[in-house]
Amino acid sequence: MRHANVLILTDDTEFARLLTACWQTERNAPAITVITSELWREQDSPARDLVVVGPVSEGKLTNVLRSLDPATAVILCVPADTREYGQLRTKYPRLVHIPLREDWAQTLLLVAGESLRRAEAVRLARQAERNAAKNENHATLGRYMLDMKHNVNNALTSMLGNAELLLLEPGQLSTQSLAQIKTIHSMALRINEVIQRFSSLASEMQEAENASQRETEETTGTSSRRR
Image (cartoon, rainbow, N blue to C red; front, side, top):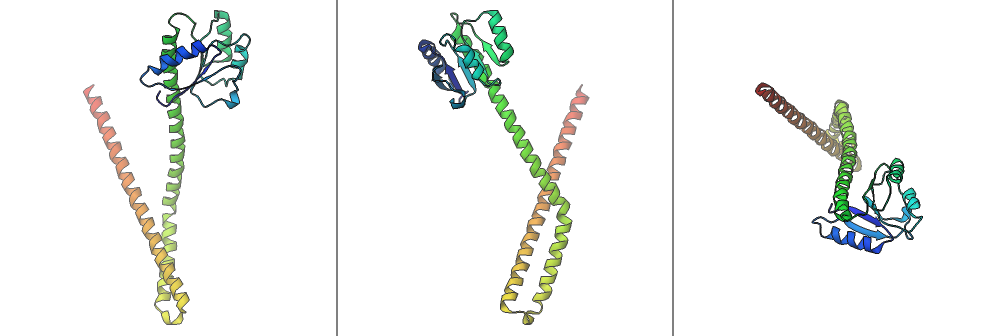
């Protein structure tokens, strides 16, 4: 929870003070922002992983909850009867209600901890999905380069061959043309080195993948025999 952000939305200063004080005694306390219902604006609110809604002025609770994104993780810590809470849960599936009783602060911290860990897990999963999509794009590019390697090598062979033929008769070329052909020849050789290095890396990666697959198969086979 070290990098988590929690928003406490309440008009009860004592509620906010006590909850903040309890949180600050935790080893990995989140960043906490306290705001009242009068100042609350969903579009202007800071980024947060969890919203704790405490006691607010009469008639404000419904408006506050209505303004929240349904996907937002919310802990509601106000008096509420079973029927009212059931209706709220229908509208806000990620809403958790903690009654205001003697041990509400400790209960809230426990529930909040689980909620923040879940938010972190979701964040990491989404990051992994983005990385996987990015890696898939790179893999597609790599496969395309491997498929085109033969064509590129043919084009490079032609460029190098023609450049070398022209360089065999330097007397028929102007100084500027000779310099340009030498540049073309040099750049073609450099591109060829890049292509060869790419092919070498592809082979190394394939060998590593095959070795990993063999190791997995051997481990699976050993486990099966032990059973």
